[in-house]
Amino acid sequence: MFSATRISNKLCPNIILKRISNNLQDGKSIASLASLSETHQLLYKTCKDFAEGELKPIAAKTDREKIYPKKQIEEMGELGLMAVCIPENVGGTGLDYLSYAIATEQISRCCASAGTIMAVQNIYVNALNNFGNDKQKEEFLRPFTDGKQIGSFSLSEPGLGSDASAVATKATKKGSNYIINGTKSWTTNGFESKGLVLFASTDKSKKHKGISCFLLKKDFPGFFVGKKEDKLGIRGSSTCSLVFEDCPVPEENVLGELGKGFNYAMITLDGGRIGIAAQACGIAQASLELAVDYASKRVSFGAPIAKLQSIQVFIFFFIRTKSPKWH
Figure 1 (tube, rainbow, N blue to C red):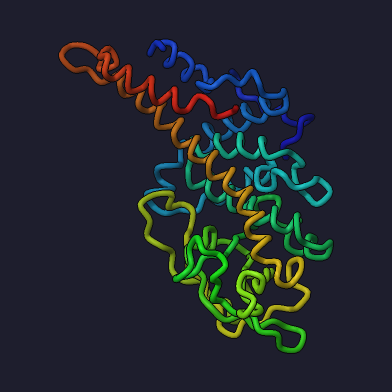
Figure 2: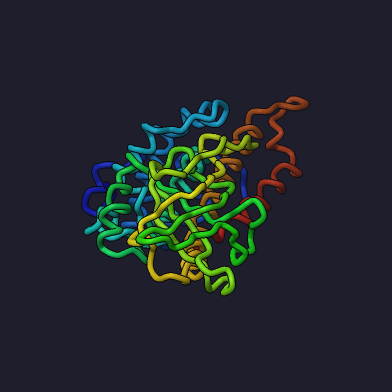
């Protein structure tokens, strides 16, 4: 697992187009890393080394054949990347959100599927850490920090996207259980996940103040996983519909307080957006590296197209847009 003391054992060795190319070949980001702390710089180098060695070689096949990279995800768990901001006393790594962004960027730079799996897994454990009680953390959080099991976060529905207050999935109290009925859509990690943070309405009359949050396991009766969506990319990460037909959930599996689910979702997604932004930076960095490499090797009219001013200007503007990412 990553920590400031253990990370030193896992270090990777280590506006003119030539300078850009040299920076990329040396493994440096276009944006300066000098402003980062020593711990953050070590994390950056460790994640970069792992991603280039373990993820980059399998990324194309993972996406093309829609393969969940199980071995690599478990290795990411060993590095502490599946619970970056979770305290160490419940199995996490105990780092900050900047660490999460740095790690997500480097993983996504070499394999966008692995970056997505990691990002949503961290959303799942963050929700548990922020709002769960001790018993819930032991059952639904601690076993999900090492990469051997992953979780998912299910809010969206067929008729519900950004309007999170319009949740149609219902949770009806019956004895000591809540009976869940409804369908969720576009659930990332939905096919492989063993744990689920689910949002459902416990009081429709209260609108967003009647939404509550529940913790489920894949083996609950009445819990069905639909087919994987056919996507244009990031296909190593599953995106599924989830169906609930009279699915009983014990009342002790209510996460936090009844009626607070909407607030919990908004707070959790605030952190999730950091991960998605970092993922986009990683993908953009990989695109830049490929563009520079191609421009340096592609010969037209007797010279590399990198010699053309129009190509140099294009790359310059790409870098100028990307350079403030750490600030």
